Length: 136
Image 1: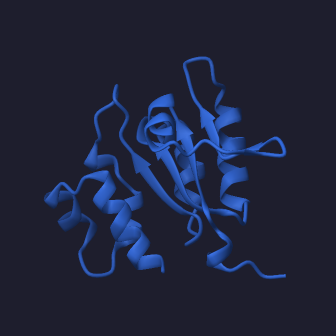
Image 2 (image 1 turned 45 degrees about the vertical axis):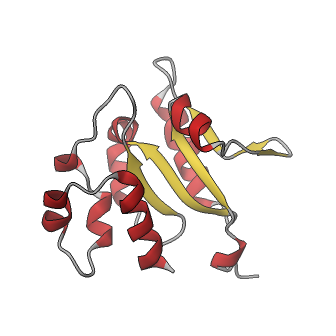
């Protein structure tokens, strides 16, 4: 059975509690969560396992990950090349967004080069809209 993008109806988050609380996207179904709250005690292996799970699940359309957390598993993040779930690195309240370090915006490269997107300083919510337009 193939999974259509229409079956993907969840947003997953790997981040501090702020994006999960603000977006109200925490969801638990039969013990399966669509979020991982990361703090200073969270092991890198736990972050990698959540990333693997969320990128393989067929019900997740978008995976949001705080940029500073993505840096902890950068080789794994950089290997990810699938359209679904769309991957977006987002800032956190304690870690400013570093456009120079953004690699996921390179995946948006259709009409504007990554350098042009970075120069425009596109906020994360607009970049998310752009990525959804490109994958649908």
